[in-house]
Length: 116
Image (tube, rainbow, N blue to C red):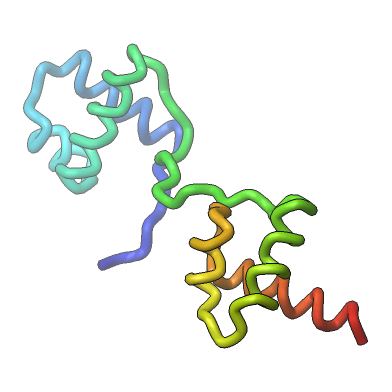
């Protein structure tokens, strides 16, 4: 799969203008502008969904994880101490926080470094 590159605002406007004024198919617009048909179709679809407004970049597909609160950090530490040898994923699920396993590992490492 190729690298993702967002369309510029001017390219989106060019696609939308061609779609609204020319009455040509998406394939024809794609050929004229030299842009893949799927890009033209996705752009037109997104603009239609936003009532003709040009939206910014594509929506993020990954959920944004929040930082752990002080209360969550205490829960993570207690779960790790009570259940030695358990995986970071297990501790995360046990505590019920929405973060990555790497965040759990980083938190526990910081707690261990603070003890020294």
